Length: 405
Image (cartoon, rainbow, N blue to C red):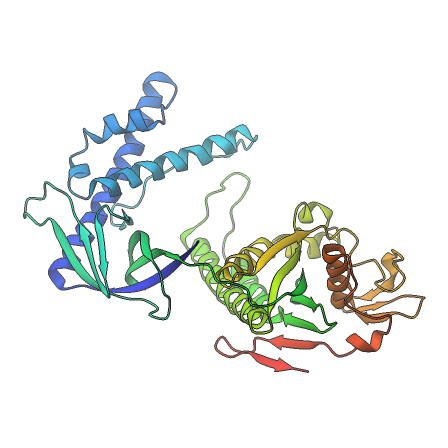
């Protein structure tokens, strides 16, 4: 069983929209009220008791806590607990500049969360949400229309997070339960993740597939230049400006979009040719192992390796494809033909050549080594001609995948 998040556009009548926005403002006031009371408690006693029992007592004193659904109120409480746990973890880790959770803007709309069997009913595109039990206007529930991907077949809605912002309007994030697929083949593939080639895949028949990461690199370079014009956080003032946060969000959305395209296309291609196991280089300690100089380290340490791995993993699960991780130590320096380890064999970022006569694309060599480590057999012969012309998948636009030989 897998879980998938569907982002749905919400269409609500003016009256229903007003009621929901009011409930979201109540969520903000409750969040700020809990933060305020915990700060007051700290000033009185020198400590803040961040527990469900203590926060439940505080909730009884906040009038707005009765104005929206009770389980949504508990979700707001849990957000406060989570924020404080992160703060305590930073303090314990020696971050002297860590700051306790702050207040939300009074005009911001907090998310409303509903759970399966408690406060939500989804019938086709009709979503019914329960509201607070003591509203002055007597409204107990509201029904809206949601537009989500109708090609996704799911068993039930696990929970719903209702959000609102001025750009996207009101949205419903539906976490749904979907059946895991069943792999219909026995083929294997090994994947090496990188910067220039986001995915370097070696299949069991010796064919290889490269997904270019150049567009992602270009996006990150663009936003790095934009960010350079904005005052950054300093050691004295770690707080990021609103513009700085805005730049980070835009960059993250664009990069995530491309990662979704890459992972989706790769997993679908694996399913089409009957792959049942994907081996990916283990990322443990990758940031500690990389040392290519200060400038390049900064780029690679920020590269979303783990995010791409997670995307491939949960997408593969829907097709019944197993994802395993394999130690990638020295995979980029080892000759796949003679197994000699020599850092100098990697002539450039994209070329690998050994004294034994083996020469190929450096990332193809790495993925071939990962394949042999994972499945104890080489997918290639000793001829470099088998991998002389890998297929490269380039993302030249956000809508189209272009395949180049």
